[in-house]
Amino acid sequence: QVQLVESGGGLVQPGGSLRLSCAASGRIVSPNVMGWYRQVPGKQRELVATSTWHGPTNYADSVKGRFTISRDNARNTVYLQMNSLKPEDTAVYYCNFRAVVSNREYWGQGTQITVSS
Image (cartoon, rainbow, N blue to C red):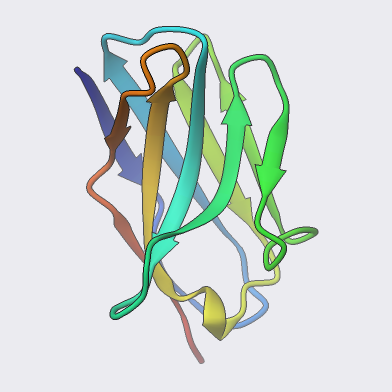
């Protein structure tokens, strides 16, 4: 089992910035992929960004150039720096951990991001 604890959500004005953190604990195996997804009511959860254990990253087109994902493997922590936030970024953001070999995945509890003036 892997436990994920997210922090850093909240209310921010359009154009502002926030940084999310997600710390993983428990049975951390490599290779793995950690990332962030988001969901708004009535819609499917969607990819925001992912980071593999050895470096490569992937972003949704809607956040490219504004969001940056990074990770600290020594701390089993992944971060999401969000700049130039827009109202359409408002959602519950979920941290995800996926073990590549078994394809088992785990989710955090979610953290609300609200972008509004």
